[in-house]
Image (cartoon, rainbow, N blue to C red; front, side, top):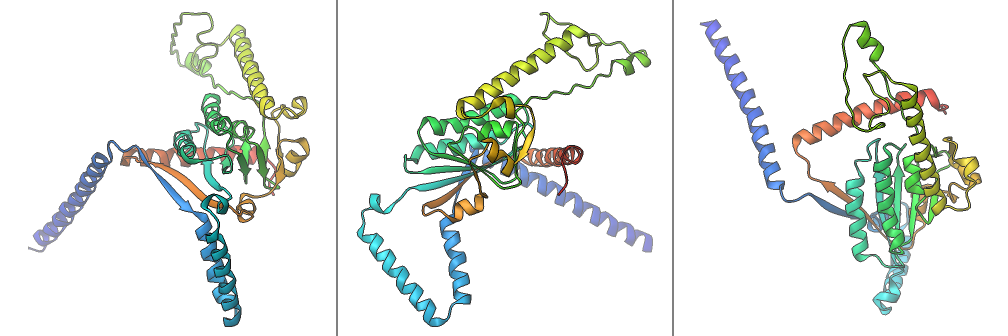
Length: 339
């Protein structure tokens, strides 16, 4: 009897667990169906209000009652004076804040596209866009598109400022150079105007195990280097030629937006810290994005476009990000000094 009781209890627990899993899957599927037709959502956060709330909370704790009353009286007088002005006179412009943090594939360019499009529907010449870029670069075509999205603001004559708090290297700097003004933290990593490609080859391993590999192409250089076939000098030379061509395009792109740069000096593939980058002309000022935002008299609106993702995409993106972060950290340990 005791065995039957234990078995029945175990069976009840198992059924409950399975039912819970099924319920989660059904709920996720329903949410996914409900979200179809809606690619994403644009979220807007008023940072000016947030900063004022911080100020009010701290002032409430630090000021005496008489000081608080005097502060409130001065604030009311300021608001009253602004109310007498026309709307156009009162508004000195807005600052739209966008964050771009991306990996090798620059997948976040899809969100950037939507955020830039949203800004362009309302922005005027007296407004400004601040983009905080954080990227070590990656695929040329992906970062080329990201830079082109920022260029849409330049074409519309909307002032564009790029802030680099941590890193904007290679493709990240390709984006940054489009700006009217580039800010960098003192030890932010900037530059790396160069091109790199690494291709492993397993041909010797396949031969060792008597494994044949066939590859058929039409066109002499349809494939220059291969993972599994035997590479030859002609393919290597063509591959290097293509890298050089890409580097020349990269340099021409940077020169177009920052013509004062000495490309022979800065387009060597090296990276520099913010203080060094300013001396070389790669950035215009040493300042963090936080300092820049706190110094603004304009209304600050942070834009964030969020794509709707199903459960599988969320898990896949999380796993991909974790692997990429781990790989980048290992690479950084070997090539950069530690502070």
